Length: 359
Length: 161
Length: 106
Image 1 (cartoon, rainbow over the protein chains, first blue to last red):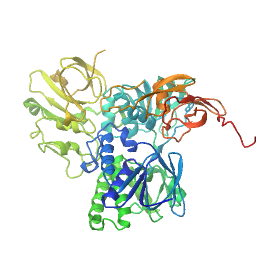
Image 2: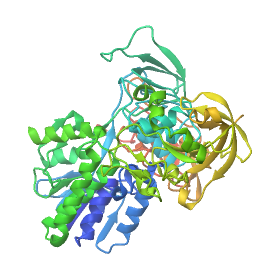
Image 3: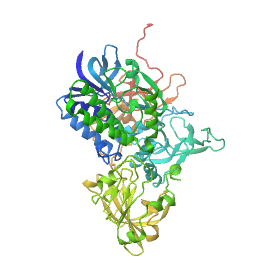
Image 4: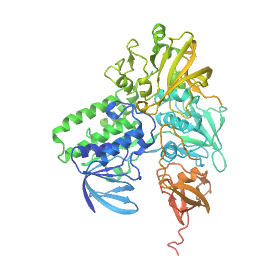
């Protein structure tokens, strides 16, 4: 059994920043990451980030991760433990941890859950064939382990993940047969779409995958056009040769720990599903439990980082650290979040967050 | 339509095209950014202060073509790879600098297929320079020479088999 | 197939080791997952589903979907997308639920 000041659960962009900010203010921080590498989704991002300087815009995701990890590792008041998966949170405040196959109990005074999100599945015939992958899995294979996921990929989803992963596949020398999206318009940033389009990849809106074809693995896909009510239009089926179908059809917050803790949860489709209620300091309905990043609503990594700083700041302040600088820092972080969310591409997250406040 | 196909329309492009007289004086950045997204490295990277995002990182960038020198620093700093430079100072020819993040890199002097915004081959281009360096952070700047009338058409290239 | 060249990334592979897939030696590198090593060697069919015995492969890469569970060194239900290779490791396709070699009934 261990007692800790602040425990941050999850070593992705939100968790790294939460740990950093709390530690910069002097709090003693333990960062727990289930994987053996820190960085979460950041380490798979080869593109320069959007946003402003404060969120490291213009720097590649993989390099942002390295910078954050380097600073964390240089701090004496931070302990980082990888291969340490938090599997439960109990009423007495205990976190149960599977650390290198050993079971451990940790009691934090404050905890920040920055557990991220998991990929959504799509229903179609033979979607269980080898060669049907989640987009994150494809990124892990090629950008973390340097393994070619396939030769020719059909991408399903033209949001930012579908577009970015398509681009990354092309950088790895993989052909993209097409990018499909069920919606009437491209959901991701149009600059991503344009750079892929000029490289010769068709983007087909109002299209979906109907069936994967193959015996032992994917050999082709049948795609179909959708009508205005998102229903397949008969007779529009086309067979596309490919050895992989990559799904980038949205993310669901990984909110299990909040459920188990008994935090108030709300179903907000704009945020990706069930998410914990929170106040403006990123604290949930249970005192001492904070959140940051995709687990509270699916958004860009830049926003996840700022939320991380904000949650880490408030957790530290609640323990009496950083009282002098807290107000200025907090105001700046809130301004940054506003900047990231105030434009037209922030519509969805803004309406989701508004619903969270309303109900 | 851009939002459906990923290809900007001719009207979209016309709205960001510098005046011909400016392009005939020498290289100038063409910012092909049509959607309000929270992003500002073009403005912060410009050493001459030629690009402004009007205090709101969601506003579209505004460039002063008279201040722009066509140095292309914004080209390698734009996260969307949406900036190019165009130079019409040589008679009959257009020099285009574009950001490139694929392998293999082309060789200087190589003749490649010139590709438009829709991914179609529209002719041939000659590679005149391939720039890389620490400040470029792995985005290469590839210089293409194309016929003058294709200055605002060619935005990519494909190496011949 | 492994990526040797990439316009942005450099791959720091660990020391070379050998794992055995259905008895056949496969090159792997320390630090990579079993599923990644198999993938690099062209092995995509990792398990058979319990009821219909349909082929299953790699899907989520974060230890959530159970599609990649294989028999590793005799132990069934190992999530090969998150378990790292070890020199000499034996890996087999898992058919159905897997057999621990004992049961409560016995």
